[in-house]
Length: 196
Image (cartoon, rainbow, N blue to C red; front, side, top):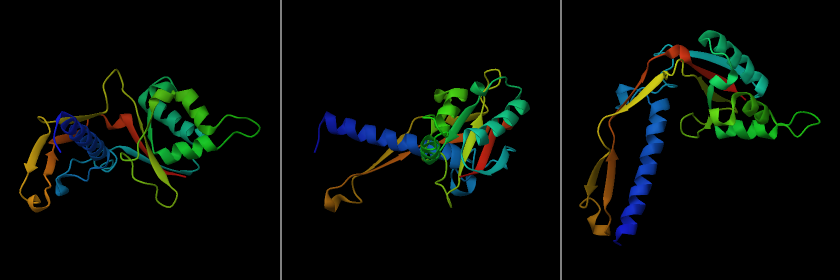
């Protein structure tokens, strides 16, 4: 097959795959030993990021307690100054849990207080739940300065290999990106674990 439409489709698929993997590495990268950057969540102890074991059902009350402590530590004035990264499973559980006698869910309460636009959901930036428990990440920008930076060096490199699978008529494409992750202000980040 050939043509501009095919090339555009390959570019879209490759860009999507690279974006997903770069997001994953920024949070879950294991560090230089495996030729990956050290991700924010995976390297929380190295970056001196506070890790808190919640050990409770994911609810507005559980998040509120941690957000309150996070606000005190960072001198921010409102829950809407906090950004939250959660797994889709946490959203599903919270949205399915209704307050008794109402049509208001735990997620509705969370979104009302911190703002739905401040809640990011990702299935690749946080590890899959283990034993029914998941993690989350709280963050804030103080005086407009973000707590972490992701640097990319140059464009995405594309390697075309027409030889390896030539017998079957296949072309092997490999994309490489050089990136680094650093945490500038660990106090502006907190990893929550044990959310059920």
